Length: 193
Image (cartoon, rainbow, N blue to C red; front, side, top):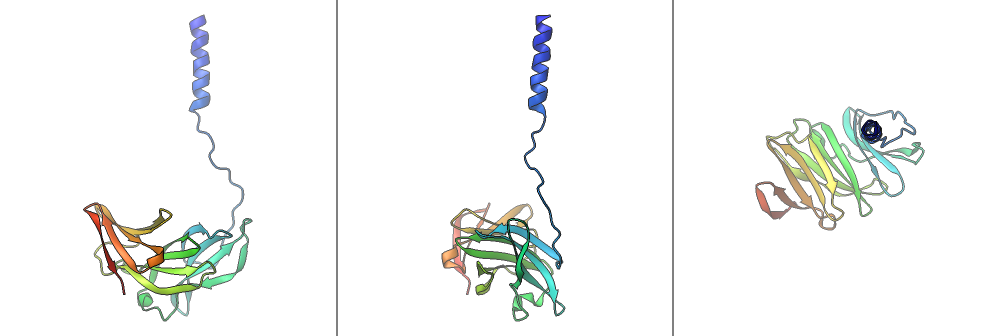
């Protein structure tokens, strides 16, 4: 009897601990209009920012949308790419974004998925400097990309079977690239002009 009670108690405790705990509770959701391709969400310190591709004058462009904490849009969309950007002669496809040290960094791929670019904007969404190639004319698909930071550097990369290629950028020396990969342990740096 005592063994049976211990066994039942053990089963009860195991079943309570064994059930998955909720880690998230849905609070609200919205549907955002005017978009063909969505990027990811990023916090600029004040607002939730969403990048999206929308067609303007028959040409896809990147736009920035800001949301408040209640998921209401703040102002109108801010255009990030323009008809004069030669990189957009090929149609823009996938993209990612992040904020670091008060600046907004966006990567994007173009049709054919052989080119990957990055550019910088200020917190309001105005571009700072030029669009910088991360990689151009690669045989690998650059639309399977990632963009992240370690708090000091920006790491942009793409899947290159059977590995990944990672490029390391210094935000204060934007335009300098160091390629890091599994086969290249000592980083090489070159300046992109």
